Image 1 (cartoon, rainbow, N blue to C red):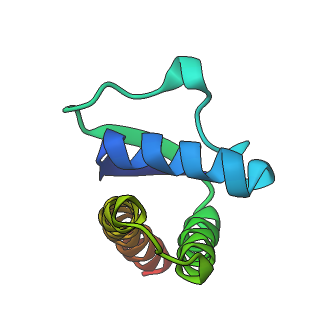
Image 2: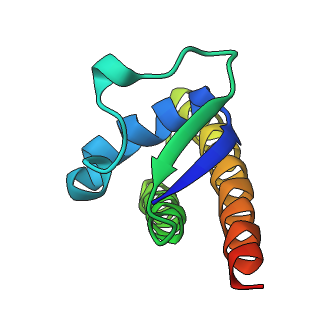
Length: 110
């Protein structure tokens, strides 16, 4: 287990919501609804380092699913724009967490 620091709580909340719908098994490794972080505060998570690439991969898979859905109406186009922003934000946060994790592991090896 390793601490992941500085990840935006909104990203964790959005990730939990998405993973509960698309990958419940992976969601079970993240905090439950009663443990949702407070928005605006930096969050410290305790996660196995190998979980971060799995989360990133699953977020990409969710993006692929969304890309396959057709945008037919203006309302759907608006939905797609929000989905893109959500996914981009989440991926950015988890990639930063992954980089932090890799740096931590490198320091431990030296």
